Image 1 (cartoon, rainbow, N blue to C red):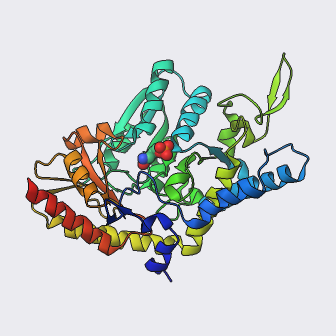
Image 2: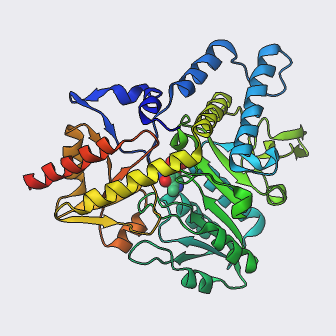
Image 3: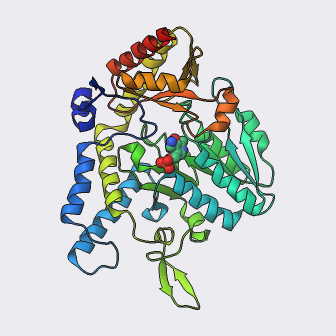
Length: 404
Ligand code: PMP
């Protein structure tokens, strides 16, 4: 069973103090803390296995390669991809999105073709498409949302034209916590002959994400938000699409044969992995995925949903509280402002109480504009957070509120 006190012991950092107060870490949408097994996997690999992967004839290189490729299989299983050829290691969500914009953009998008994004996308799912717009003259269209933070699916469907090629949507909003109906959105996209990319940065850490069940063409996520290390992430792509896309970067690892006249490329997924990969990071990510799998994604989800609901109820009772994002079934993120208190002041004063939240535009400035604010405060939960920590947040906010 899911015993929160046992779970917390796996995360040494949770035991530390800041400003002589116990740390209350509620900035998990930015990055999660790491369990001991992940940190030890990194140290152990450097201590006892380290060697560059692929093509090495010696023992260590083969062992490191085995760990790296076993990690790819772990990721495949975790997201239920059909084949390891569909699992590309990248530096993270941002690089995965830039890879698709660059390579899919090169293969499939021409002047006047349309890409649909949503009003709640992270900048990393907006700016690469704008860069492509500058290069190729594609058209960007935006799915609107209701005041509760629910995407308007009728408006979404009306955006499609015969020129629509691709839809890009966050599975879970990093600000509103809205869980978008990506399976339904994929059906609609496909009915219109378009592809769909799901940004899983905020869903993969919280509940079971099955790329075949969703029916998406691409899915991206970051290791560091799912208890793995920074600097490693994943691009899932359907094999037939990846096959038709050109390499993103050139270099070692991604080639089959090079002459000055002509170069042929490696098979998938290596075609997209130029240079020495983060093979320690991939293994540590696999350890993190095994860790959450052993706890059970369903248990994690239930725990976090209950915590989010509790937090919403408790926070609503605070005078002057404005919560952003009240979609049914919202997940693990609570964005808010209190009265006229600037979110930066709120965050700074909460920090002095040992409570780590994030403030600002959360890399979603168009969403801030839609909500009519410059910024917000945001508390975001992970598998190790407790009701007592939510209570500390609520008491902290109330204390700050009384200072103004
Ligand atoms: N998309 C979403 C929904 C996110 O929450 C984030 C991280 N805040 C990103 C993309 C970017 O992730 P990374 O910085 O790890 O590349």
